[in-house]
Length: 365
Image (cartoon, rainbow, N blue to C red):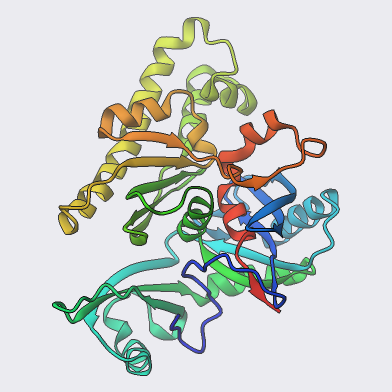
Protein backbone atom coordinates (compact mmCIF):
# COMPACT_ATOMS: atom_id res chain seq x y z
CA UNK A 1 0.00 0.00 0.00
CA UNK A 2 1.19 3.48 -0.78
CA UNK A 3 0.31 6.31 1.50
CA UNK A 4 1.39 9.79 2.45
CA UNK A 5 3.67 9.92 5.50
CA UNK A 6 1.42 12.37 7.36
CA UNK A 7 -1.59 10.09 7.14
CA UNK A 8 -3.15 8.58 10.25
CA UNK A 9 -5.67 6.78 8.08
CA UNK A 10 -5.25 3.16 7.00
CA UNK A 11 -7.97 2.83 4.45
CA UNK A 12 -7.61 0.01 1.91
CA UNK A 13 -8.76 -3.46 2.91
CA UNK A 14 -6.11 -5.83 4.17
CA UNK A 15 -5.84 -9.59 3.77
CA UNK A 16 -6.81 -11.48 6.87
CA UNK A 17 -3.45 -13.03 7.65
CA UNK A 18 -2.37 -13.93 11.16
CA UNK A 19 1.05 -13.46 12.70
CA UNK A 20 2.49 -12.98 16.16
CA UNK A 21 2.85 -9.28 15.46
CA UNK A 22 -0.85 -8.77 14.80
CA UNK A 23 -3.59 -7.89 17.21
CA UNK A 24 -7.24 -7.31 16.55
CA UNK A 25 -8.64 -4.11 18.10
CA UNK A 26 -12.10 -3.38 19.38
CA UNK A 27 -14.25 -2.32 16.45
CA UNK A 28 -16.28 0.80 17.25
CA UNK A 29 -18.90 2.03 14.80
CA UNK A 30 -19.91 5.55 15.86
CA UNK A 31 -23.21 6.30 14.17
CA UNK A 32 -25.64 9.19 14.55
CA UNK A 33 -28.11 6.98 16.42
CA UNK A 34 -25.98 4.50 18.36
CA UNK A 35 -22.55 3.17 19.23
CA UNK A 36 -21.88 -0.40 18.07
CA UNK A 37 -18.93 -2.34 19.47
CA UNK A 38 -17.50 -5.74 18.63
CA UNK A 39 -14.44 -7.73 19.65
CA UNK A 40 -13.12 -10.88 17.98
CA UNK A 41 -10.07 -13.12 18.27
CA UNK A 42 -8.38 -15.11 15.54
CA UNK A 43 -9.45 -18.76 15.48
CA UNK A 44 -7.72 -20.81 12.80
CA UNK A 45 -8.62 -19.39 9.40
CA UNK A 46 -11.53 -17.40 10.77
CA UNK A 47 -12.58 -15.49 13.89
CA UNK A 48 -14.38 -16.13 17.15
CA UNK A 49 -16.75 -13.55 18.58
CA UNK A 50 -15.70 -12.40 22.04
CA UNK A 51 -18.17 -9.61 22.69
CA UNK A 52 -20.58 -7.21 21.04
CA UNK A 53 -23.14 -4.66 22.04
CA UNK A 54 -24.76 -1.35 21.15
CA UNK A 55 -25.92 1.70 23.03
CA UNK A 56 -28.10 4.55 21.88
CA UNK A 57 -26.61 8.05 21.70
CA UNK A 58 -28.33 11.25 22.81
CA UNK A 59 -30.00 12.85 19.81
CA UNK A 60 -27.67 15.27 18.03
CA UNK A 61 -24.46 13.93 19.64
CA UNK A 62 -23.16 12.96 16.19
CA UNK A 63 -24.48 14.57 13.00
CA UNK A 64 -23.35 14.01 9.41
CA UNK A 65 -20.37 12.02 10.67
CA UNK A 66 -19.14 14.90 12.87
CA UNK A 67 -18.91 14.93 16.66
CA UNK A 68 -21.22 17.54 18.17
CA UNK A 69 -21.11 16.40 21.80
CA UNK A 70 -17.80 14.55 22.30
CA UNK A 71 -18.20 14.21 26.06
CA UNK A 72 -21.55 12.44 25.66
CA UNK A 73 -20.15 10.12 22.99
CA UNK A 74 -17.09 9.32 25.14
CA UNK A 75 -19.33 8.58 28.11
CA UNK A 76 -21.52 6.24 26.04
CA UNK A 77 -18.48 4.37 24.70
CA UNK A 78 -16.85 4.10 28.14
CA UNK A 79 -20.04 2.74 29.71
CA UNK A 80 -20.60 0.23 26.92
CA UNK A 81 -17.02 -1.07 27.05
CA UNK A 82 -17.29 -1.39 30.83
CA UNK A 83 -20.61 -3.26 30.57
CA UNK A 84 -19.07 -5.62 28.01
CA UNK A 85 -16.10 -6.17 30.40
CA UNK A 86 -13.54 -5.42 27.71
CA UNK A 87 -9.99 -4.65 28.85
CA UNK A 88 -8.52 -3.95 25.41
CA UNK A 89 -7.52 -0.32 24.84
CA UNK A 90 -6.70 -0.45 21.11
CA UNK A 91 -9.65 0.44 18.89
CA UNK A 92 -10.50 0.73 15.21
CA UNK A 93 -13.03 3.33 14.05
CA UNK A 94 -14.51 4.47 10.77
CA UNK A 95 -15.44 7.88 9.45
CA UNK A 96 -17.93 8.92 6.79
CA UNK A 97 -20.07 11.78 5.59
CA UNK A 98 -19.23 15.13 4.01
CA UNK A 99 -15.82 15.27 5.67
CA UNK A 100 -14.61 12.31 3.60
CA UNK A 101 -13.87 12.15 -0.13
CA UNK A 102 -13.39 8.79 -1.84
CA UNK A 103 -12.34 9.16 -5.45
CA UNK A 104 -10.97 6.81 -8.08
CA UNK A 105 -8.51 8.47 -10.45
CA UNK A 106 -6.86 7.08 -13.58
CA UNK A 107 -3.13 7.69 -13.96
CA UNK A 108 -0.18 6.57 -16.03
CA UNK A 109 1.59 3.58 -14.48
CA UNK A 110 4.36 4.74 -12.14
CA UNK A 111 6.85 3.23 -9.74
CA UNK A 112 5.83 3.45 -6.07
CA UNK A 113 8.07 6.42 -5.22
CA UNK A 114 7.05 8.29 -8.37
CA UNK A 115 3.36 7.72 -7.62
CA UNK A 116 3.84 8.92 -4.05
CA UNK A 117 5.52 12.11 -5.26
CA UNK A 118 2.77 12.69 -7.82
CA UNK A 119 -0.01 12.30 -5.24
CA UNK A 120 1.70 14.69 -2.83
CA UNK A 121 2.16 17.41 -5.45
CA UNK A 122 -0.95 16.99 -7.63
CA UNK A 123 -3.68 15.73 -5.28
CA UNK A 124 -5.17 19.20 -4.88
CA UNK A 125 -6.81 18.99 -8.31
CA UNK A 126 -8.81 15.92 -7.27
CA UNK A 127 -10.28 16.96 -3.92
CA UNK A 128 -12.39 19.99 -2.89
CA UNK A 129 -10.51 20.54 0.39
CA UNK A 130 -7.36 22.51 1.12
CA UNK A 131 -4.53 19.97 1.08
CA UNK A 132 -3.22 21.26 4.42
CA UNK A 133 -6.57 20.50 6.06
CA UNK A 134 -6.82 16.80 5.26
CA UNK A 135 -5.33 13.40 5.97
CA UNK A 136 -4.71 11.40 2.82
CA UNK A 137 -4.29 7.81 1.78
CA UNK A 138 -4.34 6.02 -1.56
CA UNK A 139 -3.88 2.63 -3.13
CA UNK A 140 -2.85 1.64 -6.63
CA UNK A 141 -5.47 -0.86 -7.80
CA UNK A 142 -3.12 -2.19 -10.51
CA UNK A 143 -5.76 -2.25 -13.23
CA UNK A 144 -3.16 -1.82 -15.97
CA UNK A 145 -2.55 -4.62 -18.50
CA UNK A 146 0.06 -5.44 -21.13
CA UNK A 147 -1.98 -3.45 -23.65
CA UNK A 148 -3.01 -0.62 -21.31
CA UNK A 149 -0.35 1.35 -19.43
CA UNK A 150 -2.69 3.28 -17.15
CA UNK A 151 -3.97 2.27 -13.74
CA UNK A 152 -6.78 3.22 -11.35
CA UNK A 153 -5.80 4.67 -7.98
CA UNK A 154 -8.23 4.87 -5.06
CA UNK A 155 -7.73 8.19 -3.32
CA UNK A 156 -9.23 9.09 0.06
CA UNK A 157 -9.11 12.42 1.88
CA UNK A 158 -10.57 13.13 5.31
CA UNK A 159 -10.69 16.47 7.11
CA UNK A 160 -8.05 16.65 9.82
CA UNK A 161 -10.35 18.56 12.14
CA UNK A 162 -12.95 15.77 12.07
CA UNK A 163 -10.46 12.91 12.42
CA UNK A 164 -8.58 14.70 15.21
CA UNK A 165 -11.87 15.26 17.01
CA UNK A 166 -12.54 11.53 17.08
CA UNK A 167 -8.97 10.76 18.15
CA UNK A 168 -9.14 13.26 21.02
CA UNK A 169 -12.56 12.03 22.13
CA UNK A 170 -11.42 8.41 22.26
CA UNK A 171 -8.18 9.36 23.99
CA UNK A 172 -10.25 11.10 26.66
CA UNK A 173 -12.03 7.76 27.14
CA UNK A 174 -8.68 6.06 27.75
CA UNK A 175 -8.57 4.38 24.33
CA UNK A 176 -5.90 4.27 21.63
CA UNK A 177 -6.99 4.48 17.99
CA UNK A 178 -4.84 2.15 15.88
CA UNK A 179 -6.94 2.16 12.70
CA UNK A 180 -9.11 4.82 11.08
CA UNK A 181 -11.10 3.34 8.21
CA UNK A 182 -13.92 4.40 5.92
CA UNK A 183 -17.31 2.87 6.73
CA UNK A 184 -17.85 1.57 3.19
CA UNK A 185 -14.47 -0.19 3.22
CA UNK A 186 -15.12 -1.76 6.64
CA UNK A 187 -18.36 -3.09 5.19
CA UNK A 188 -16.46 -4.56 2.26
CA UNK A 189 -14.01 -6.17 4.67
CA UNK A 190 -16.69 -8.10 6.59
CA UNK A 191 -18.47 -9.07 3.38
CA UNK A 192 -15.23 -10.39 1.88
CA UNK A 193 -14.45 -12.43 4.99
CA UNK A 194 -17.89 -14.07 5.00
CA UNK A 195 -18.74 -14.36 1.31
CA UNK A 196 -15.64 -13.66 -0.78
CA UNK A 197 -15.45 -11.13 -3.61
CA UNK A 198 -16.06 -13.38 -6.59
CA UNK A 199 -19.33 -11.68 -7.51
CA UNK A 200 -19.87 -8.04 -8.52
CA UNK A 201 -22.09 -6.57 -5.81
CA UNK A 202 -23.44 -3.32 -4.43
CA UNK A 203 -22.88 -3.18 -0.66
CA UNK A 204 -25.44 -0.84 0.89
CA UNK A 205 -25.44 0.06 4.59
CA UNK A 206 -28.46 2.08 5.71
CA UNK A 207 -28.03 3.86 9.02
CA UNK A 208 -30.18 6.39 10.82
CA UNK A 209 -29.12 9.38 8.73
CA UNK A 210 -26.95 8.09 5.87
CA UNK A 211 -26.74 5.37 3.29
CA UNK A 212 -23.25 4.14 2.44
CA UNK A 213 -22.83 2.56 -1.00
CA UNK A 214 -19.77 0.57 -2.04
CA UNK A 215 -19.84 -1.16 -5.43
CA UNK A 216 -17.28 -3.93 -5.66
CA UNK A 217 -16.38 -5.33 -9.08
CA UNK A 218 -13.82 -8.06 -9.79
CA UNK A 219 -12.72 -7.92 -6.17
CA UNK A 220 -12.06 -4.15 -6.20
CA UNK A 221 -14.05 -1.24 -4.79
CA UNK A 222 -14.82 0.90 -7.84
CA UNK A 223 -17.40 3.32 -6.43
CA UNK A 224 -17.92 4.40 -2.83
CA UNK A 225 -20.20 7.19 -1.68
CA UNK A 226 -22.41 8.30 1.21
CA UNK A 227 -25.91 9.66 0.67
CA UNK A 228 -27.70 11.68 3.35
CA UNK A 229 -30.83 9.54 3.68
CA UNK A 230 -31.62 7.03 6.40
CA UNK A 231 -34.12 5.21 8.55
CA UNK A 232 -34.67 8.18 10.87
CA UNK A 233 -36.70 9.70 8.01
CA UNK A 234 -39.23 6.91 8.40
CA UNK A 235 -39.30 7.12 12.19
CA UNK A 236 -39.82 10.89 12.19
CA UNK A 237 -42.62 10.70 9.63
CA UNK A 238 -44.38 7.88 11.49
CA UNK A 239 -44.14 9.76 14.79
CA UNK A 240 -45.51 12.95 13.21
CA UNK A 241 -48.29 11.24 11.27
CA UNK A 242 -49.61 9.06 14.10
CA UNK A 243 -48.51 10.93 17.22
CA UNK A 244 -46.72 7.88 18.65
CA UNK A 245 -43.54 7.54 20.72
CA UNK A 246 -40.12 6.88 19.18
CA UNK A 247 -40.27 3.24 20.35
CA UNK A 248 -43.73 2.76 18.85
CA UNK A 249 -42.58 4.31 15.57
CA UNK A 250 -39.63 1.91 15.53
CA UNK A 251 -42.01 -1.02 16.07
CA UNK A 252 -44.29 0.10 13.23
CA UNK A 253 -41.28 0.61 10.96
CA UNK A 254 -39.93 -2.88 11.57
CA UNK A 255 -43.28 -4.66 11.70
CA UNK A 256 -43.33 -5.41 15.43
CA UNK A 257 -46.26 -3.17 16.36
CA UNK A 258 -49.84 -3.99 15.28
CA UNK A 259 -50.72 -1.84 12.27
CA UNK A 260 -54.52 -2.06 12.23
CA UNK A 261 -56.05 0.99 10.51
CA UNK A 262 -52.62 2.61 9.97
CA UNK A 263 -51.66 0.30 7.09
CA UNK A 264 -52.66 2.56 4.20
CA UNK A 265 -50.87 5.62 5.59
CA UNK A 266 -47.84 3.53 6.53
CA UNK A 267 -47.67 2.21 2.98
CA UNK A 268 -47.64 5.79 1.67
CA UNK A 269 -44.82 6.79 4.03
CA UNK A 270 -42.76 3.73 3.10
CA UNK A 271 -43.38 4.15 -0.63
CA UNK A 272 -42.36 7.82 -0.68
CA UNK A 273 -39.26 7.47 1.50
CA UNK A 274 -37.97 4.13 0.24
CA UNK A 275 -38.48 5.25 -3.36
CA UNK A 276 -36.05 8.09 -2.60
CA UNK A 277 -33.55 5.55 -1.24
CA UNK A 278 -33.96 3.39 -4.33
CA UNK A 279 -33.42 6.39 -6.63
CA UNK A 280 -30.16 7.27 -4.87
CA UNK A 281 -28.98 3.69 -5.20
CA UNK A 282 -30.00 3.63 -8.86
CA UNK A 283 -27.90 6.75 -9.50
CA UNK A 284 -24.82 5.01 -8.11
CA UNK A 285 -25.51 1.83 -10.08
CA UNK A 286 -26.11 3.79 -13.30
CA UNK A 287 -22.80 5.61 -12.81
CA UNK A 288 -21.12 2.25 -12.28
CA UNK A 289 -22.57 0.88 -15.52
CA UNK A 290 -21.50 4.00 -17.41
CA UNK A 291 -17.89 3.16 -16.60
CA UNK A 292 -18.26 -0.64 -16.48
CA UNK A 293 -20.90 -1.59 -19.09
CA UNK A 294 -19.73 -5.20 -19.38
CA UNK A 295 -19.47 -6.00 -15.65
CA UNK A 296 -23.01 -6.82 -14.55
CA UNK A 297 -23.88 -6.65 -10.86
CA UNK A 298 -25.25 -9.88 -9.47
CA UNK A 299 -26.96 -8.58 -6.33
CA UNK A 300 -27.42 -5.88 -3.71
CA UNK A 301 -26.27 -6.68 -0.17
CA UNK A 302 -28.09 -4.71 2.55
CA UNK A 303 -26.86 -4.00 6.06
CA UNK A 304 -27.32 -1.41 8.79
CA UNK A 305 -30.31 -0.81 11.05
CA UNK A 306 -32.30 0.53 8.11
CA UNK A 307 -32.03 -2.81 6.31
CA UNK A 308 -34.42 -4.22 8.92
CA UNK A 309 -37.30 -2.07 7.68
CA UNK A 310 -40.03 -4.58 6.92
CA UNK A 311 -40.20 -5.45 3.23
CA UNK A 312 -37.30 -3.18 2.15
CA UNK A 313 -35.36 -6.01 0.50
CA UNK A 314 -38.31 -6.96 -1.71
CA UNK A 315 -39.00 -3.29 -2.49
CA UNK A 316 -35.43 -2.70 -3.67
CA UNK A 317 -35.49 -5.90 -5.72
CA UNK A 318 -38.62 -4.75 -7.56
CA UNK A 319 -37.51 -1.14 -8.00
CA UNK A 320 -33.94 -1.82 -9.09
CA UNK A 321 -34.27 -5.21 -10.75
CA UNK A 322 -31.50 -7.00 -8.84
CA UNK A 323 -31.53 -9.78 -6.28
CA UNK A 324 -31.32 -8.34 -2.75
CA UNK A 325 -29.82 -10.13 0.23
CA UNK A 326 -29.45 -9.11 3.88
CA UNK A 327 -25.83 -9.38 5.04
CA UNK A 328 -25.09 -11.95 7.75
CA UNK A 329 -21.82 -10.70 9.30
CA UNK A 330 -21.63 -13.80 11.52
CA UNK A 331 -21.83 -16.26 8.63
CA UNK A 332 -18.25 -17.51 9.14
CA UNK A 333 -17.55 -16.09 12.59
CA UNK A 334 -17.63 -18.64 15.39
CA UNK A 335 -20.21 -17.79 18.05
CA UNK A 336 -20.61 -19.73 21.29
CA UNK A 337 -24.29 -20.49 21.87
CA UNK A 338 -23.64 -20.39 25.63
CA UNK A 339 -22.64 -16.75 25.41
CA UNK A 340 -24.67 -15.46 22.46
CA UNK A 341 -28.34 -16.10 21.75
CA UNK A 342 -28.80 -16.95 18.07
CA UNK A 343 -32.07 -15.03 17.79
CA UNK A 344 -30.35 -11.93 19.18
CA UNK A 345 -27.45 -12.29 16.74
CA UNK A 346 -29.89 -12.68 13.83
CA UNK A 347 -31.67 -9.53 14.97
CA UNK A 348 -28.60 -7.38 15.68
CA UNK A 349 -26.42 -8.75 12.85
CA UNK A 350 -27.14 -6.27 10.02
CA UNK A 351 -26.39 -3.23 12.16
CA UNK A 352 -23.16 -4.73 13.52
CA UNK A 353 -21.60 -5.17 10.06
CA UNK A 354 -19.30 -2.12 10.12
CA UNK A 355 -18.19 -2.70 13.73
CA UNK A 356 -17.25 -6.27 12.82
CA UNK A 357 -15.53 -5.11 9.64
CA UNK A 358 -13.36 -2.91 11.83
CA UNK A 359 -12.75 -5.60 14.45
CA UNK A 360 -11.31 -8.09 11.94
CA UNK A 361 -8.68 -5.65 10.65
CA UNK A 362 -5.34 -6.56 12.18
CA UNK A 363 -2.99 -3.92 13.47
CA UNK A 364 0.69 -4.59 14.01
CA UNK A 365 2.11 -4.33 17.48
